[in-house]
Length: 285
Image 1 (cartoon, rainbow, N blue to C red):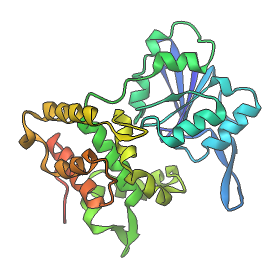
Image 2: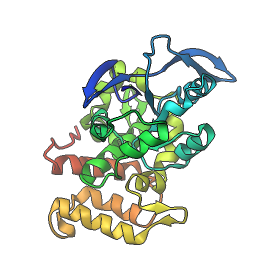
Image 3: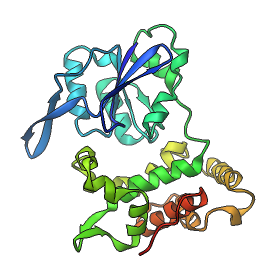
Image 4: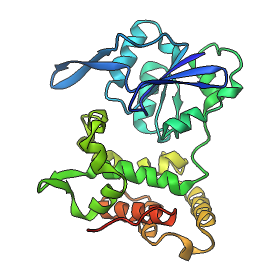
């Protein structure tokens, strides 16, 4: 099958996986105009034919592109995906367009590692394909998963100040995660326009806990949280002392189901995880 994947890449490319060809594109849409102060997108003219399409929920053109595909009668070939779990926003898109969701896909590599080899015949619709591919919630490599969430949080909180980037309490983490190089190069064009408006989303405990399925409509699931903490300890060794020091404060907030309002807590957690996993320490100079 020919599978179109939008997002998760900085250049268009095709890759063979099992008997399928995944065609990665930065975006299925291109800017058309502003309407009521908001950007509108039209479908790119160079989109290849596809049997199914995986549309990244975080792309700024997602709603316009899904609307276009629905008008064209192709919506039953479309699946949305993102790095988190079944968030409120994701579920709203699923209901509005009648499409399935793939969760816990933070990178291009995670998409390539889906169960493509189990898709022997073309499924009848998008829901049938999603049922085969759906990955389990991130459970192995929890430290890496948390570090990815930290990067998303810090990117939203980064801001220009005094001719550079800050705030100063998270600058070492921004440097370490490559933010300054990313934002100074072509990566800037990949950022959603409403990045600054997403602060309230990434501060919510639900945003952090959702990818691990540690939260329901009533809040944090205490029994699952206990098992999650134990899994972290097993990754790091034995006992609380084995957890990276900077991570314990973040876990303390999340374990109470509280929102993460202090960005320095996230910066400390990210730097601690990176150093624990063998990366260079965050440079405070």
